[in-house]
Length: 376
Ligand SMILES: NC(=O)c1ccc[n+]([C@@H]2O[C@H](COP(=O)([O-])OP(=O)(O)OC[C@H]3O[C@@H](n4cnc5c(N)ncnc54)[C@H](OP(=O)(O)O)[C@@H]3O)[C@@H](O)[C@H]2O)c1
Ligand SMILES: [Zn+2]
Image (cartoon, rainbow, N blue to C red; front, side):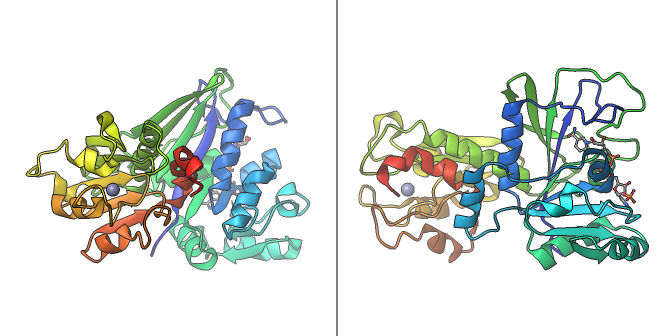
């Protein structure tokens, strides 16, 4: 059964703690990082916390920026992500802010916990998962019953530990704060136990004021095709490359990266590269590769804009170049608007020939940015 994409998000001290033992929540992040978290929330369908965090922090878990809520509504989504909590006991405070702010809420619990929660009259759906709590059942239910495709998990340590140990996390976004807690009883991000995550793959590091964001992807030994977190990483790079294009009023600015199935970057390109006013990004990237390269059939082309299906400037459009290169997978952020050509259906051309085309619309704003002057 399909699960949502699961993103674990946490801030830790230099000695690996999520909080101190005092009654108030320890502020680990910086203001700019709280804003980044707000953005990640806005891009999520649901936000999950454990009952321990609900009791300790009494959080609201909202999307705070009105423009982010407006963008969600404009895209046909609820203003706030679904709020999800997990409790075995059902021992929850019905007056906590969690229940009385934001949009819809759901509690996943045990059969006994559900009895208790119902007696409390919580303002939420209550979903019992049996005598114990099963994370796979929870994720399957979130996807099937609420349509959650992207789940952000905001702690605490018990929840993060189980999801990582059970191999259910797709991405970890960790913020390291420059302070030390120094209390052995303070909660830790990850507890003891068996981890199958192997050596995590580092996707990105970013300095945000005085904290460092590190994004990791758990890599199961012998992992097969590129997993979802890597798709976001490479597509983000393609969107960054689009910003390098010399400006044009007659063509889009696009970036592209070709990546082998083991995660090796094979080539990259962007529109109008090297002074060629007609160059397209995918074309420029593929031109750097030997057409006989044995890694091409397993490779993925990441392109900020859907590959073109028609073009006046060259005989073969990019969708055709991709097919001819033998590439079987394309990931893109944005379907081509009919600014320059009508019926710009590169996706249709590719999928009709069995190429998988994945659109990750959460990157569309990034892909559009260098094209804002085109009004597309
Ligand atoms: N720095 C950060 O980024 C960050 C983020 C979040 C939280 N925190 C901190 O983390 C601390 C809380 O973390 P925590 O680890 O104590 O709590 P937690 O992970 O938020 O929640 C643990 C609780 O969730 C329920 N639960 C989780 N897995 C379950 C399972 N398999 N079966 C049944 N119930 C399950 C249980 O609730 P019941 O007890 O109701 O059965 C359990 O006590 C707080 O100090 C908070 O400030 C920090
Ligand atoms: Zn093209």
